Image (cartoon, rainbow, N blue to C red; front, side, top):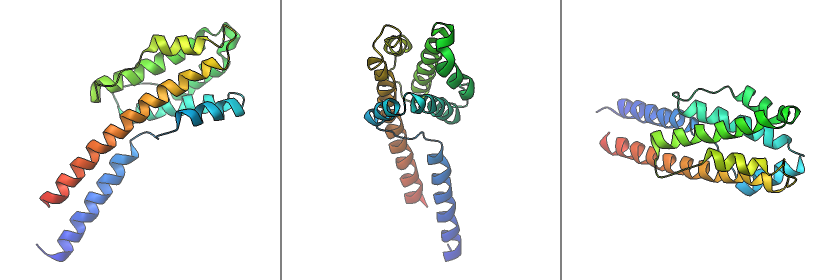
Length: 162
């Protein structure tokens, strides 16, 4: 094989690796999510909720979600006795669970448990409700780490084969 052909193949592999890793969600510190949500009086939580829904939908096209609607439900759910907020939190956790089942069944997340953690705000324990994003982000971090490792193995195999 010519040098130019090898260089072009390497460039294509690196480009494919970049495109593939771009679909992986962002690994965030669960404690950082809680801290930023607390410091910003919940605004970071709304942003985080939007981003998580967007990342799940981008990673797995079988999962349909409108991240904006989900964020609005979480932010203005208190106007309707928190029902839209609980439903949005429950559905977000269920979407993550669906993504896990499709790709990495060893990770589990419970929509009911997530909604319960979020419901603690309505019961007068606003600080405890911040455990929901920490819980879900921890599971997502584990999933993104495993998927990145799988992707790295595939890329390494392709490099060896080339």
